[in-house]
Length: 371
Image 1 (cartoon, rainbow, N blue to C red):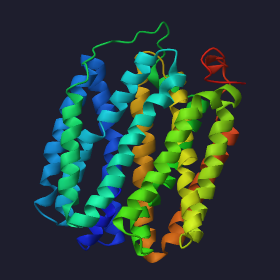
Image 2 (image 1 turned 90 degrees about the horizontal axis):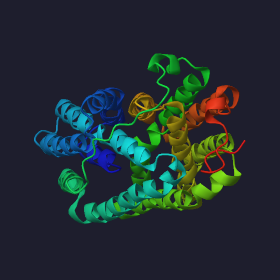
Image 3 (image 1 turned 120 degrees about the vertical axis):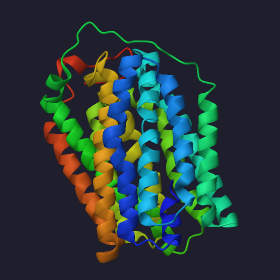
C-alpha cells in the first residue's frame, strides 16, 4: 500500500484525487469494523469471518485494473477496503483473548506483522523498480492471495469471553477518560494522513528510486520491531501515561523533521527511526488501554471503535487535509499541519487522559502499568 500513491500519480491523478482515494480507504474503517464486530459477537466464529474477508478482499481488488478512471478506482477501493479493514480488529481481539492477563506479551506477537511489512515493502520496491509502477495492482493482488491462503491454516475459534461486570457500552463511552482517549487517537491518526498518503511521493520528488523508498519504509518498521522487543521491559519501569506522552512528543518532532528538512538524508533517517514512537509505542499503549477500558463482550466493540475512530475517521480526515494542502501549500505545510494535530493530541492526553482510575490500577505482576 505505500506504493499506491506512486501508482495513482503514474495514472495522472493530482494530489487532491490521491488524497481522496486514501480517504475512502481509511473512511471504510469507520463502518466496517463495527459491522463485522457485530457479526463476530453474534456468531462467535472470528477466524471464519477473517477467512471470508480475506477472500472477498482479493476478489474485489482484482477489479482495480479494469478501468483507470477516478470513480472506478474509488468504488473498487471502497468495496475492497470494507472487507480488508474488517480483518485486523478480529485478529487483535483473538490475540488479546488468548493472552488473557498476559497482554504485556502482545508486542512480541505484533512485531511479526512488522516483519511481514518489511518483506513486502522492501521486496515490493525492488520489484516495482524492475517491472514498473504499472505492475503494482498485480503485485498487491498476489500478496492478498497469500493472505487468504495463510488464513486457511489458522484454527477457527468460537471462544466466547465472559466477564462478571457487563456495563452498558454507552455508559462506558461517556466517561471522560474514554472520550479523551478517542479524541487523542483521532488527532494522532489524522496527523499520519500526509505520511501514509504522500511520503512515497515526497521521496520520489526528492529523487529516490522505488528501491530506496522501500528501504525508507523498512527502516521505520525495523525501528518499530526493535521497540516491540523491549516494550515488555519498558512497561516495568515507565508508566503508561509517560509512554503515551513521550510518543506523542516524538511524533511532533518527526513531522517537523519531514516538513522542514526533507531534503536532508540524515533528517529523513531520524524521522523514520521515530516511527518506533509515533506508531510502535503509541499503538501498544493504546491496545493496553483498550483492553483495560473495554471488558468482556465489549472487547471486540472496543477494538472496532479503536480502528473506526483512529484509523478510520482520523485517517480519512488526515488524508483529505493532506490532499488539498499538497498542491496548494506544499509538503512543508502539509506535514507542519500534522505536527499541529499531534500537538493538540498532546494537550488532550496531558490534560484529560486519566489512566490511574481504580479500574486500571498498577498491575505489577504483568508489567502493564506502574503508577
